[in-house]
Amino acid sequence: MKTKKINQILVNFFLNLELTKRNQEIQGIYDYIPHLNSDDKIENIVFNSILKNGFIENITFDYHKNVLSKIEYQIKRDEIENHIIFKYHFNYSNDKLNSVYIKNRLLYKFNYNSSGVLKEIKYFRKDQVTEVYNVLYYYDNQMIKFSSDIIKNDDVYFNVNESKDFLIWNKDLKIKKFSFDIFSYENITYLNSKNIETITYSTTIDQNLLFTWLYIQFDKRNNWTERKSKGYTSYRIINYK
Image 1 (cartoon, rainbow, N blue to C red):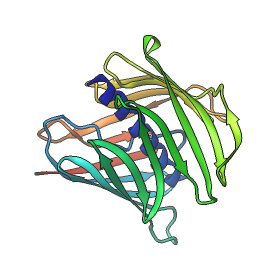
Image 2: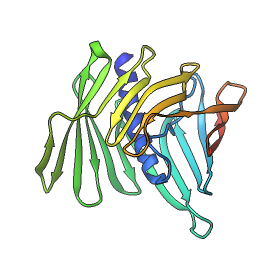
Image 3: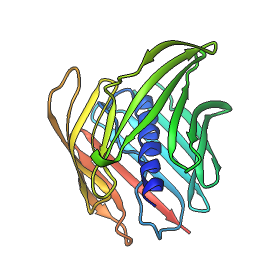
C-alpha cells in the first residue's frame, strides 16, 4: 500500500507540473489532480477557474472504472484569443500508469522495477529531446531525490548526477516540501489530510510568499466544489456514478 501511494505522489506531481505549464500565468506547481475519498465512484469532474487578469481555465477529468483515463485542458488567456485545448489520455498496465499521450504523441513514460516501485520517468519533448528523471528513494528521511539525463538522438548530452530536485512526504504520505527546477515549496499543509491548504514557497523572483486556499463550498460527500486564493477562484462539479 505504501509503494502504491508513493508512486501516486510522483505521478500526480508530474501531471500537476504538466497542467501548470499550460497555464503560463500561475507561479509554481498547482494541485490540479483531484484527491477524492477512496469509496467515491466518479464518472467525471468538471473544473473551472478564473484568474484575476481574465484567464479562464476549463478542465475535464474523465474516469474509467474509477481510474483517471483522460484530461481535457482548455485555457483562454485574453478576451480575443479562443480557448487553446490540450487533450491527454492515459494507458495503464497492471494497475499502474504506464504512459501519457497528448493527442497521439507520447508525452510521459513511467517505468517500474520488479517490485512495482516507480524508478524512472521520461518526458518526451517536441524537439526530439527526452528528459529522464531517475528516482532515488530515501525512506528513512521520507525523501525522493532525482538524478537527470537529457537525451537526444539516443545520446546523453547532459547529465546531472547530483540534482538538487527532491520531494519530501509526511506521515500521511502527502508532499510536505519539494524543490523542482526553479520552484521551491515548503510547509505544505492539508485540510482534512487531503486537499492542500497552505504553502510557503519561493522562486527566483519571489521569496517565501504564503499561498493559501480557502475552501468555500463542499458537496454532500465532503469533496470541495469551490475554493479561492488571492486572484484565483476555482469551481468543481463532481459527477458521481
